[in-house]
Length: 85
Image (cartoon, rainbow, N blue to C red; front, side, top):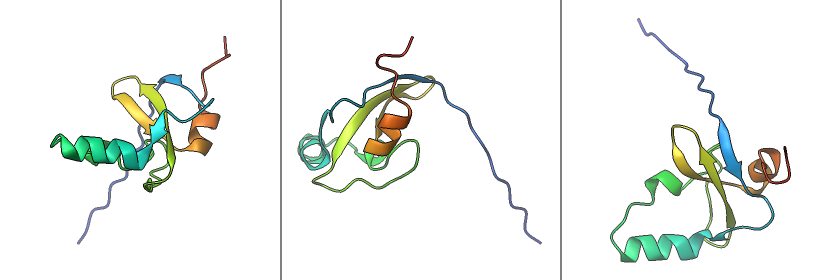
């Protein structure tokens, strides 16, 4: 007998900037690995779990309870907080 549980979490996006990517994922990954730092938290888009590739731009986000996260372009546009009041 198996029990399957599914969890749904809601997170408040404090800041998301969709104007331009903060950097290219491959550059970020190289710097982190060179300094012996983990990239596990940043390998995928926080919202949709899209896996980043080395030549893809990543967008900054800040989520309540999680801190700084990366968004893909489509999620950054969807959750953009710049210019909203």
